[in-house]
Image (cartoon, rainbow, N blue to C red; front, side, top):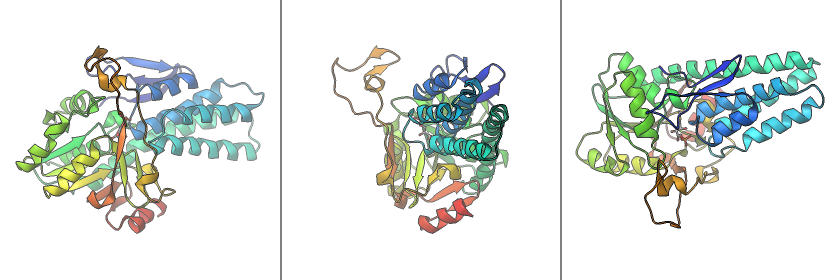
Length: 344
Ligand code: MRU
């Protein structure tokens, strides 16, 4: 399986997801500005992977900072990284985790070099833990998938979107590892094409049967009995179980309900934002119009076309059959079930 992100002596190394599947290029981020650029420009994307990158961004920032006014520099690094993308809460979760550690080190009177080492260790731990979490949630979710059925997924919630293994694709991988001969239908996921470029590429590498659909084919395939379950990832889940995920997810969820097909969300508890009562409060990123009017730099709409390009939508919890986390499976009513899984 591909290494999405790695801490090395040279810097934070990421596979450039903008170039996949045609080119497999590794990019080395040597300071926190590079890491922030990589998140903003989608070199690395997917909520848990963004969290891992942010933790490493903080660590590399502090590693390169001088001792003078370390507190001020630390805040600057965290604020800079936090301004990259607004929707995936894992970004803020990871930065908060690094902030808490920094504060406790300061309070204990640790010297700057000890703090640096501690933050690097923590960032590497965030990555290791994410992979372990995905394997856990994969195990919980695998049991929900029908034996030998076809599972639809939207966007890429795979190894590339996480530290490794994946959330939605982690559930599919775990089911296959347990002997379930599943097949996958991958929605291409306009406009950034995470489905066609990344999900199909990943599943092919694992020899998991996958067929590609354009987004508008989802309803037809469901209506014709070609889909037995849907599983997707999430960028942020509100306390009531409303789910922000890649644009188009809401339509897929509504279509699934209309056709009596279970719709599951797989995400680590770090994606659950108990501070938000409902999905209405989740900030939705609006991305560049070029992503819609151009394909690989080629203009496909008249010049000056006005464009809407929300990168995410919110699926109300009434469409969500279950939320699969590393701590178990939450079902409606989500307010108590999510709280129990997140707070223990
Ligand atoms: O804009 P992206 O590619 O970062 O959006 C990614 C998604 O919407 C994923 O489905 C989500 O982050 C879950 S990844 C495990």
